[in-house]
Image 1 (cartoon, rainbow, N blue to C red):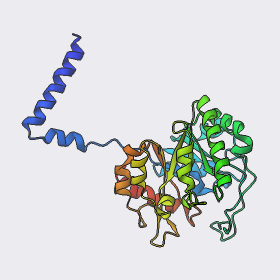
Image 2 (cartoon, helix red, strand yellow):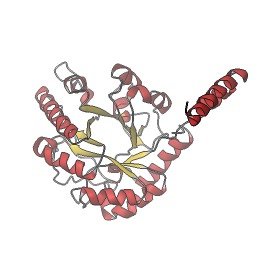
Image 3 (cartoon, one colour):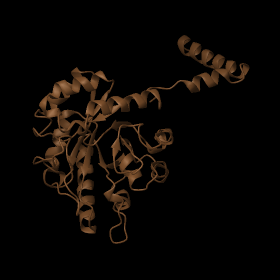
Image 4 (tube, helix red, strand yellow):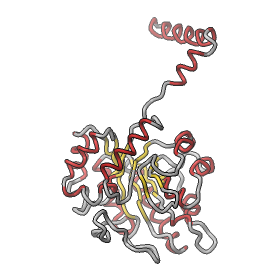
Length: 310
């Protein structure tokens, strides 16, 4: 037997015996050791200001301890006015990883009865023209591959009617297949609208059951799910391994206002304790249209590190 291998086995055996001899103290010590999970950020949090100074914004984010980024929409178009490779290089140079990117499933339109959200300046948000998976799927997949990211995520797709749900499912399945071919995992990100019944059926349930469970994973926005009356832990139990990505934000008691993580009413401890059943690989802090994005993400990472100890 190789000397090093024999020494390893002997050491492992000694450690196991010492655990018994010390009434489990060694085992308790080992169980208390925890690998820190890198905290990610969804850049939509900075939608109103990031394009004014992309590198400066990313530098501040890195300085707070965020290690992974999920990019979103830019007023400059593309990847904050850069090619995928250029954006990736900037992120990497700042010591972070570009893990995921958001795209639209279909041309943007407001849900019936909804109004355009306002930005930090109090004015209605202006959404620039953007490519979408229904019309530009292959280009968006190819761009993601060029950037070398692990995940491509559909941020939003129409589900107000069963016809829209059917169309969305077709787009998701096609994109999942195309993403698989280039080594990217595709996923769908929810809001609360997908949980509103349509003709007696819940769109989110149809998205789960009628998309390929390997090609189309879910990025569960915990707050939107809670707002819709869902229990994330229960969802993980029903569909184990289907939720490799999470969005983490908090809500006030009315469930109408988004808050920094840890300053609202969502109990994150049981949710994070169930990360393994969810299949969670990465999570991203997000705050939609905050008045002070930097203050918000500072509070969020403080809670995650100090209280949840992730």
